[in-house]
Image (tube, rainbow, N blue to C red):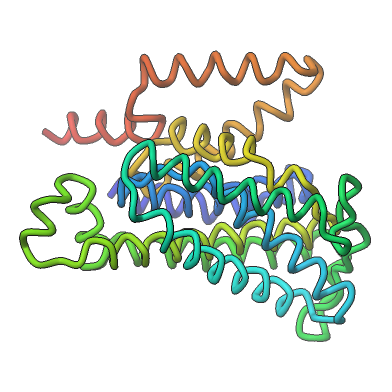
Length: 306
């Protein structure tokens, strides 16, 4: 019941957001919300902590920018190309990383992501430190002009809903139940006959693909792909969003992304102190609200029902 209410609220808020908020800012929040949901699928349900998800987010942004700018792809095809690149990259990274567990898994993903960051800095088509600029928004299906902020917003919102729907269906499927079994007791799942590495790899690829979908969409929104999207700090930010919203919850990453994004925007006047403030908030949430915002709401709701 709580999830249904939250979904209705999210849908209404998403449909009416351009009426009371700057569309470009809300589109940015939606991209990070999808990114956080993709990361939560891996950590919250499979128990795999990746420090390298910025590689998929940023790498897909560069690919989308390049194919739309240089090859003349439509924005939709460009976004799909970026997501496809993230899927292939996720398969390669996942194949190498799932052979390790715990902190070793996290460090392998971080090391691999730094390779992508270095390539983004050195490759001639990426623009180096200046980034890939001048990415066209173009037209959707040759009819809808995406240079219009409202049209672009609803296109982005539709992409977010599709990505969110994929994650929700994955979580609430036999596949998702196996992932949770692996998270809780990997040895027992292995003894029951499940190919644990196979399930981990599939979860990694799905998570990477949706993270790439978010990054590719962001590149079209801002018509720009930068090194920041592929930096390890972006991986840290998505971890923060997921934990603040509620790890292992369906709507937690969405709330966490909106909370962290809105705070970063509102506190931007403090300059570099923003990171200190966000770090303090993160520590408080971990110590006081260990389940995150949505986790605590669900706990209170279940207590009232009991």
